[in-house]
Image (tube, rainbow, N blue to C red):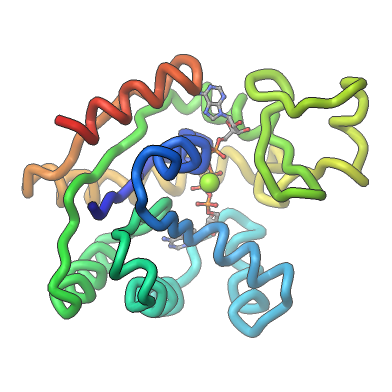
Amino acid sequence: MNILLMGLPGAGKGTQSERITQDYPVIHIATGDIFRQAIREETPLGLEAKSYTDHGNLVPDEITNSLVKERLNQADVKENGFMLDGYPRTIQQAKALDQNLQELGSQIDAVIYIDVDPETLKERLSGRIISVATGESYHKIYNPPKVEDASEMDDPAKFYQREDDKPEKVAHRIQLQMESIQPILDYYEERGLLTRVSGEGSIDDVYDNVKKALTK
Ligand code: AP5
Ligand code: MG
């Protein structure tokens, strides 16, 4: 099965991906995670991507398309199928993906759009913290990590905030992606592939919605 998981920043793509991969044998490919790893490792890709991701802007299509193409060609993805998280984000990327899949003799089986109100997105992103030790994402209120004392969540040796989750960046990211996502949703809706699911409610509630969409 090949899935596209779409949604605005903070919609819960990463959170729902963790659940989906427990139930489906698909390989999770998150372009944002790939960029952040490259930035941490200071690779040429990371150095190039950083100037865009730090400001909440999209990395140019040529760079993003070529890294996705390379990943889709790897054996584990060919064998198990994929779940793309945060790609495509432009029509040009959607067309490049179609081309790659055609070359691979593969196809998209489901496109899920996790729909969340912009005010809720801001609240989710501003409370997101990442574990220094494991890289896992949490939310200070909605999905707190297991800690002995709540003050540990503010300890920079234990948890950090993503650079693009700083308040001044969050509104820009949401606005930018609200504009760019609509034509892509139309693109998949016309092909009968798109299911919109409500991303409001608890993480479990949202996963129930996602699962229904995947089994319909
Ligand atoms: P990316 O990493 O994809 O960021 P994003 O789209 O902004 O999405 P997020 O990862 O912030 O949110 P999410 O939907 O995964 O939410 P999460 O589950 O963490 O991309 C980063 C950057 O890389 C981009 O800005 C761009 O520069 C670049 N990039 C990436 N892809 C690109 C592309 N295709 N083209 C060009 N550039 C690209 O949840 C958020 C928080 O909410 C967490 O704290 C979580 O615990 C909490 N939460 C989740 N679900 C719930 C719930 N139901 N109730 C309460 N809290 C919840
Ligand atoms: Mg994410």
